[in-house]
Amino acid sequence: MLSIVHEEREILGMDRCIVGEQICKKWSFSSFMQEGILRHHTPLLDDDFSYLGAIIFLAHFVTNSDFTGEMISIDGF
Image (cartoon, rainbow, N blue to C red; front, side, top):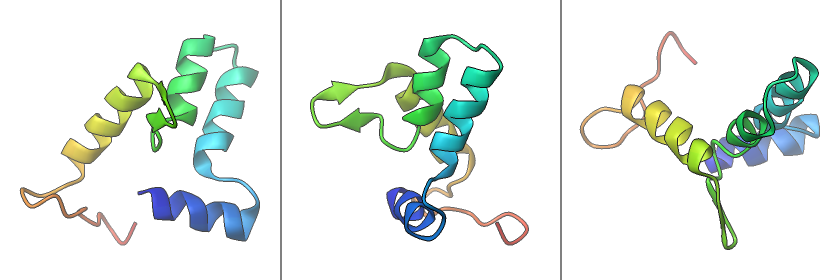
C-alpha cells in the first residue's frame, strides 16, 4: 500500500491520505480522526505510532485481502 501512496505523491504532488486529512480538517473532525486518516497507510512512522491509523489500516487490509494477504481488486480499483 505504501507504494501506491508514493506513486500518488510522485504523479499528483499529494496522496489520498493528505486529501482525506484536509477534508476532515475542513469538516471540523477531531485532530485524532485527522491523524488517523492521514496515517492509515503509515501507522508506524519512525518512532511515532498512530493507533487510529493502525485500526483503519487493519480494517482496510482485512476487508480487502484474501487469506494469503494479497490485495483483492474490486471492479478494477
